[in-house]
Image 1 (cartoon, one colour):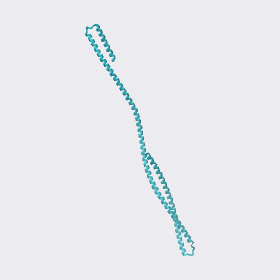
Image 2 (tube, helix red, strand yellow; image 1 turned 180 degrees about the horizontal axis):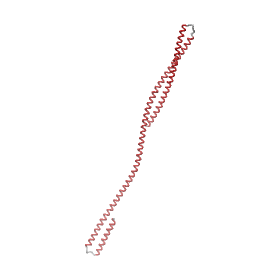
Image 3 (cartoon, one colour; image 1 turned 120 degrees about the horizontal axis):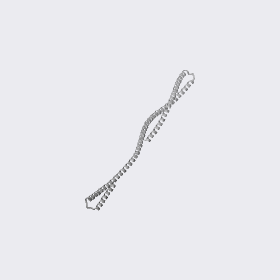
Image 4 (cartoon, one colour; image 1 turned 135 degrees about the vertical axis):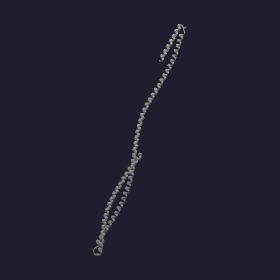
Length: 255
């Protein structure tokens, strides 16, 4: 796009330079035409004067001829002089006429150059206007594209900042999540430990109940059985006390 745009600008510059040269040529041709017109007018005036003099000289010569016919005794010198003047005027008229023809031919050539230059200038002017319009359109499109690019660049920078901030927040969330997982694992460990302890306590209580039941049965047997000796009673009481002491130890251990 930029290559085409630069090429069009260069082409526009070349067209403007060419039109300037054509316009200069046209101006010079018009000046030449004006000068030729002045020369032609001046030469036309000279021709008119020469023609008037020639006619007068011819009338004068005819008058002398008529007079010579009536007066043959007068000298012929006057007639010869008049004829010489008439011939000189005729040559001057022919010379001016030839010069007039050349000037008119040159004027026609200059006028053709002016017409051609004007036509070329108008054609170049149309091309210049068209090219300027295209360049303005492309320049407007280029400015719009640049503005859109700047907008996209700003949005991209904003997205990058948001992504960076999001990554920071995500890191924090990951850390919090890992801490939560660690806390859950710890709680699960504590629950498992408490469960094991509770199972041990339940087992100790079951054993205590069994020992308590056995002690009560022994005591009941001792009360019912009157035939036991004092030594046996003492031995049985010691066993009962030992059982009670064991139960207390178990109770303290569970608490």
